[in-house]
Length: 301
Image (tube, rainbow, N blue to C red; front, side, top):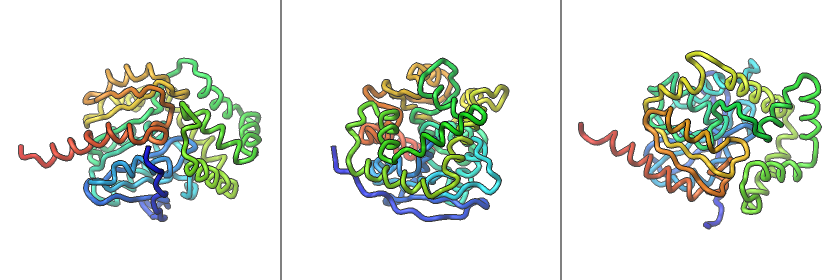
């Protein structure tokens, strides 16, 4: 495995009336926008952005209230609100873009692609959080944090533990092999956790985004995520993992049936954040997918 690269540089941008911290890099070419998961940040994409930097310009925002992005003025952390923030970022540059999302970011990406197809050239979903109500321990433990009064209090107490403990818990939950995380990435995660302690909105951003995600799991009608997925008419790469403790890998079969133009990849011995745990393997799948879509777009009819 190659040595980890440094974090991509970032800046605060004003897009659509929102302030977003965005990390970017690459040597030009087609534009790729990356959306992180619940409790994550733009740094989740460092290594995959590096693996795709040749021929692609990557942009990874911290969703409102996460990472170094300030909280939204209206306190709206719904999937719709996150999708609106991402759509504003995309509109501010060349589009349509290659859109990549993990977990909550996958849900946001599906909503955005369905509501604004003119902004999306391809869709790559890495363990997307699409509705699945079968019992699964880790997600049900998370939902427990939404129980009125008691849940947020317990979650706040958990977050008050030493940053080292919180980082190890994160690795245990999201990696198949937590020990495989490079020391540099662990130290960066530790620094980020300590930075979160300085933000009063840090707990609210996670709990309210989780509340918004649960609402999507229960939504019915034409804007239900699976209904919207069936109408996404762009090439879609689906990346699931057999060792995922959040997203049941059996959902991959449903996704392969629902998305009209998809290719499915199932990674073995990999956890919820494949782009962090196995960035080279993910890049090997994503790179030809993106370049193929770029080639077909420029090919004469």
